[in-house]
Image (tube, rainbow over all chains, first blue to last red; front, side, top):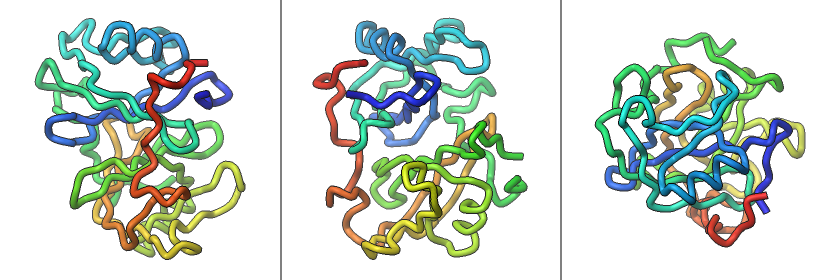
Amino acid sequence: MLNYNAQGLIPAVIQDDDTAAVLMLGYMNAETLQMTKAKGQVVFWSRSRKKIWHKGATSGDFLEVRSIKADCENNSLLVRVRMVGGAVCHTGAACCFFNDVEELPAT
Amino acid sequence: MLNYNAQGLIPAVIQDDDTAAVLMLGYMNAETLQMTKAKGQVVFWSRSRKKIWHKGATSGDFLEVRSIKADCENNSLLVRVRMVGGAVCHTGAACCFFNDVEELPAT
């Protein structure tokens, strides 16, 4: 049984199955996890837009699912994917993790 | 500026800097992120125990920080680490992501 948070969401870490790069972190609810399994492509719940977010539906940069694992407490997911396009980030970057935290204030 | 959630937390994906394996996902608040930077070892906020959780303090399996990046929206962290011990999971497993989601009910 997966442990969704109070908002009914579970964080999903997206990792490139070929390069092992961590591409992004998104959130799924029970419905979008089910859609992800059914389509074989990553489908998130967008917290900002409050709607289903089929990754790549507008950009073409779909994420094909290779495997989905839950952690030991079933409160986060690791989704290994094949990138269909060259980018995962809305900025056009291949991966979303590029801000150096040393340069960011902690609060 | 990092975007902490309503509970003052930000998810931190922990990745082995040598093998690129995704080891676990934990949460930090501003204080434990600051401690993480200062110590050079991962310090989480334990949501279940509601206290500071210096990873490895009881097991010896510390996680030495190699780099910390925030994502494009500054609402999640990617922490690349060197594992001091052989395990990251409380089960003794090297990594926490071992539950096959195909075998778990979605809700």
